[in-house]
Picture 1: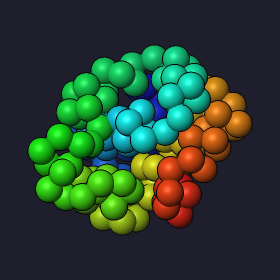
Picture 2: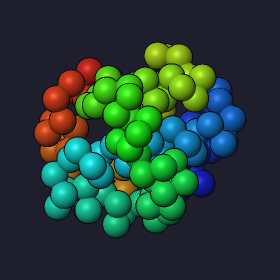
Picture 3: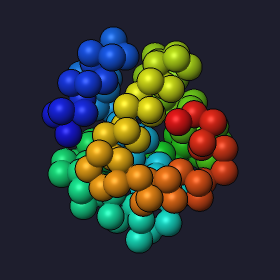
Picture 4: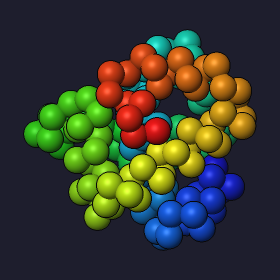
Amino acid sequence: MDELIARITEHVGIDAEKAQSAVGMILGFLQKEGPQDRVGEMMAALPGAQELIDRAGGGGGGFLGGLMGGGVMGLGQQLMGLGLGMGEIAGISKETMAYAKEKVGDEPVDEVIGSIPGLSQFI
């Protein structure tokens, strides 16, 4: 995951701590909302992913996620809560999915993205 975080800090221009939190939230959201078999393939190919998810509070849901709403919009609100703008959120999402595709291949990642309503517009 260090490689992904370095890419995000370089290309998106945010610090590593914020990048780690954002990636943890995004991956946790996918873990919660996506097809378990495909998400499992992704997580297996991304060593350290579960640690980021755990540090980010499990990736959505819970009390804070419930207050902000669910789905992609709830995730967006959580990411904005880190002080990220829409451009930064899009950049982080695109880098994260590109990295996942490099590690596990296009098919599992595309299936996860396609299974969550509204997600494709941010990737």
